[in-house]
Image (cartoon, rainbow, N blue to C red; front, side, top):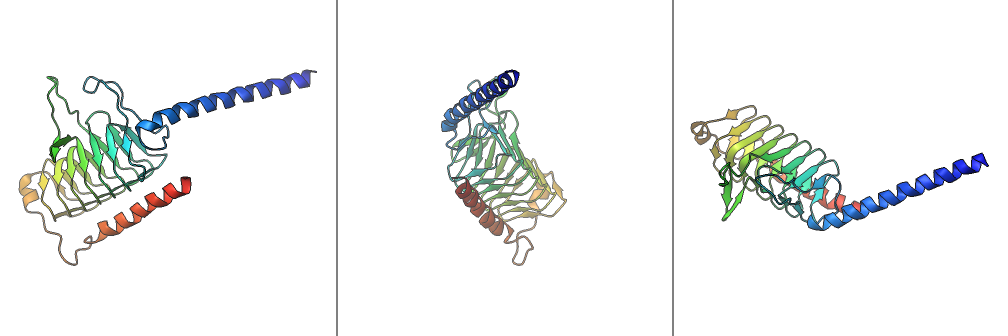
Length: 244
């Protein structure tokens, strides 16, 4: 009789665990409608804070892929065919909003964040204007943010640009068709279209930025971004196909 009671107790506990798991899954599923994406616990609304009293969740295109080990938080828009790799962090809870354009990729360990975009008087600050809309961080189309790079707002990165491994962008505007080679940095400057920053070089004055070399025929990274975009858009499609 004692043995049967133990079995009964185990069965009851197992049933309770299954019911709790089912309720949790239904709750997550209900919140997923706001993100336009099947939602993992790593995709969530921003908290209620003085500069953003209304918690808002990410808007993620259904053709984008966000790995379960990546974090997408708050006022973030992720466009079509974007690949967000493991351990990337896109955190729109302080500097808002954040935008990632079509066919771009956010690779392993990348951090995207922004400074507070409302000052103590309630005025907008630390924002870039793009076609009449303001962003804490704006990343254009077909742009690659390679492993462990950081883009910290206020920041703008244009189309078809390659931000190399462990490169850093802060309070800076990077144009179209640019390259930041690995471990380089652009801080507080505007980098014109078609320029590159050599590996390990920190550009911290506009005078430096104005003297940057042009991407030239035969440059080692001339076609790197095209290849990286090709790979990552196909990865996004492949991963989505695998889980549907």
